[in-house]
Amino acid sequence: MNVATTIDDAPAEVRRLAVSLSDLQSAPASPGQVEHLFRAILQGFATDIERLAHDDPDLPARWGALDTLLDRPIRVDLGTRILPGSGRGIDHEGALCLATDEGVVRVFGGRVLRDPPDASSPPIGSSARR
Image (cartoon, rainbow, N blue to C red):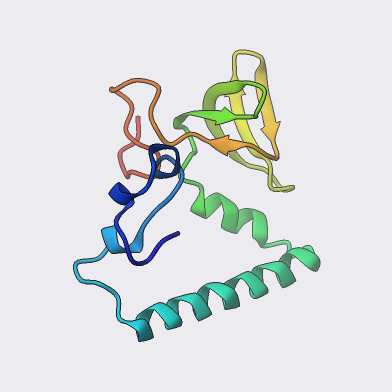
């Protein structure tokens, strides 16, 4: 995550994975706003780690509510291969469930590719769903 420069300034391989807050707001963030944002992010991490450490039973529902990949065509780069499929939610252990030609696969690591496999698919994170 970047707060100062636009994502257009980043190399292509970074643009596929990153976001710049300057692209999401109409005016540059002040130093005070940046500090406030980073404090909030760090506090959120601490809270989430605490919830994970204590197996908070409400976490899976929260993950489901935040899942922007549900029912979306996606590809996951597993390092040794690209796994195409359709998002089928996040399970109780935090795995991304992906419907593939091989059946439903639980993915615990990898890189979700943001670029659509073809021009007819909306970008990941957009509000349009198929």
